[in-house]
Image 1 (cartoon, rainbow over the protein chains, first blue to last red):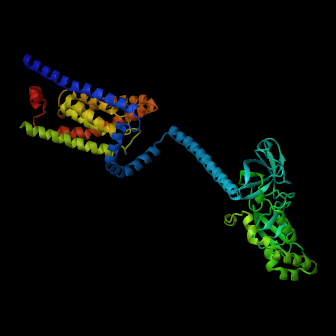
Image 2: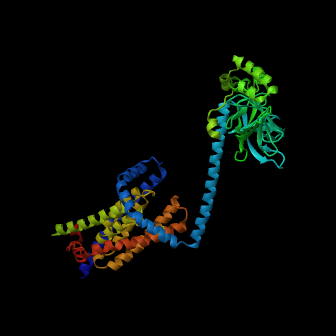
Image 3: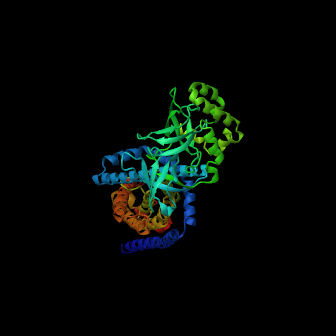
Length: 358
Length: 181
């Protein structure tokens, strides 16, 4: 028995020592692997090896995923049913945080979209302008003004026109070093020299006390229809010509009136636009030339009306209007320098505006 | 006769290894209960160690850990180290205790498994892979131990009921361990 017991102990000792040496060796290897793994970059040999193994075992993982999906769903249901109050509170807090993040990102996305549109406008019309942000609106019910966050320190001055991505919104009427007040085009003391894009009929776009816009002083023999686009004429040297102002929403003409009663729907609104462009200077191309002004004075009802509708309108408008209409018609049609197509090219009007407004 | 028995033993180990590898690849990443996952490589190393002893247990633990490390998004080398030690500890008791003491084998496996999971969790915290030691130990460590212990029972039971002849019986081991090598 002692001999047998001794051999058994010897056997056990032998067995343990047999496993101990590999253990030491493997521990050293493992620690070396761990050390190299932690010190190497993401393109190191161990990471590469793992990527290879992952690629090889991918089909097996896909099968496992397909098999485990129903069980995961059950597990999720069970987990949700047994979720603790603390877990639910954490999830609610996380949900609120994520909701706030989504709102912030959506806001940033919309801001980026608006700024992109402003840049498009700037590029299309080749405007020399500075971007600003609307920081306040009118404080009373009688005036239509907004305040922007830049002023004379940024080179702003009184009378500078202001646009957003849709078109003209107004002009600066007060400047302080760090902010400016912009009178909107629908303020009742606002007036912008404008023309109907299709017929080139001239007029003055004026704000009304109710906040609407009217295109005044368009002769009743001009051709104006609902849906026509109204743009700046550039006369006066404040606004660059061709910028969108709005679209004709109604046209009225009484029998004995000299001018149309035209209501214009504004192209731009400050309610959903926070970023604006302040046009700091106009190029020569953007201002009306003396020929333009002379042509406008001579032919306020526009060329289209003059060439096509002159005889009809003169017949309808009666004696008092016949002379002026006819006279301007003759001059207008006879003036090749002021053709419709050439003027249209000078306005830089973006054709896509028609689609945006519609 | 010894050759036939050894082949039966190798076949059983091979089947267990194949099943564990497939389950580790396919199922382990998909199943998570209370933060714990099933480590079939731990189960494989435990089965081999409890069946054959510490020497093969160390080998099984090392290579099982290697497979785990290179198929899971964890620091490579850590599970190799843990399972090498676990294989040695599990196999350092009485040889082939599995066929005679299944309950004790399961308990031993559970204890070693808990130690491995806790040590592994702490190591993950130290290497920065985990941020909270409490969730690592109680969530990952404890839950994984329970899952591993539950899933090792069928394997240990099957191995305990397998007929390996007398090649790895305790009696043979006591009488002539050297002959088997």
